[in-house]
Image (cartoon, rainbow, N blue to C red; front, side, top):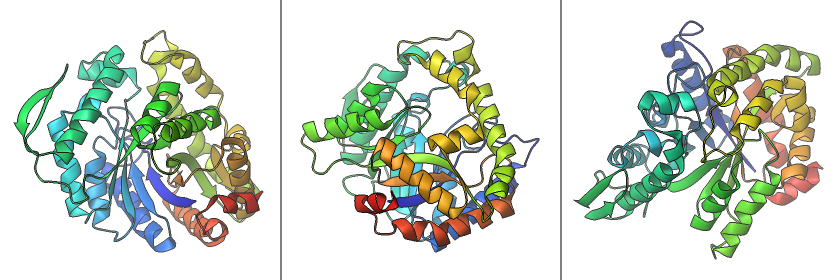
Length: 359
């Protein structure tokens, strides 16, 4: 298993300035590489404190590329539904060149109704826009003089510049949370998978790996799962320090998904009203128990990882939120250093048998 750091801002301009947030996050990314973390990742969201400080992950990762040398730069994820394929293809190839070929591209459908509404796009077009955008972006990255006639965008004889540094293109991840078809789609197309443990995802990951194998792709796929992480020498203090920032993060999330809980429905998001209501019941202690939050001492976190892998199976990458919400910057750095010193070596051989030993 490899570990990386991810940045999913849940802060407002009244909480912390953008300049301060970015400076702290880039400092964490730079030190994370020195400590042995393998990737840095950030999201694309808009307008509210849930993700609003990251409207363009390409910009943040371009800055991170100049502070790091080896770690992978991961969009987690860009949203074709709100971007023209020309724009995304050009920005992806540009960052791939700036970073010397270190970019991995996560792509997602988006899921917040308020974003669709403000962009003037129907949530019922989410699936169609995503799949068309994905196809067009891949075409623009892999072919010159490309032509595609779609429902939302069309082009003829276009060569997107710059050309990617990685050939034929950077690796693609598909973000999925609870829709089985999304997991199967990612596997059948041979793309890597990004997942979030907001519900039982073990069977969904297996759906992904099954679709991967049945499509004839070599290997068994590649999975990245996101977690909150706070590591401290003292079990009580770990929970005490992390509790308020964790609760603030989920308060921001529940505010952002409010449309789902107030009657919004969509054919492209089955049962999202029910799953988003369940988020209201999330607590730090409950998430520690379920494995969604890796909070505790190094030994406790090792045990949490063992429970998670026993529940959902092996996954190749853990993407960790280090400075979530209003967590103190100094505390976040100390947590990251302790995790790197005491937890990462336990799983250093990056293989499924490491998970077996942890149990």
